[in-house]
Image 1 (cartoon, rainbow, N blue to C red):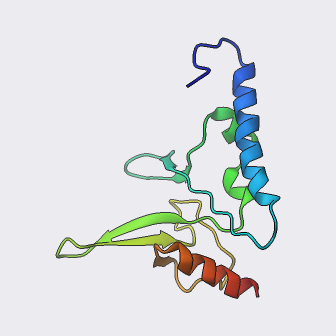
Image 2: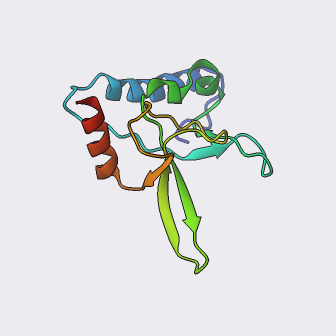
Length: 129
């Protein structure tokens, strides 16, 4: 928004480059660090046939980079409501056709796991070791 009044296409290229460099910086950090990137999702399908992906800052990123492709682990959130109205918050570990969720085979049991980042980190560390 700081650059909203600027005219021209160059600002979009620069914004996309900076966004990509932030993601790339996480990839290039020391191996003993856990880097978690939290994003909003965006429905690029319809209400009847949703298709969710990571929300980005514009068409340049969407056309040039598949953000999810930069990561080995991509989790989406899910909320399941029981008959009493109680909510259970979960992570989706594998795509069900509506998300771009992905994790290595056998890293997690099932396609839905507790929405608990420490659990996720522990499972990934166990899987990798």
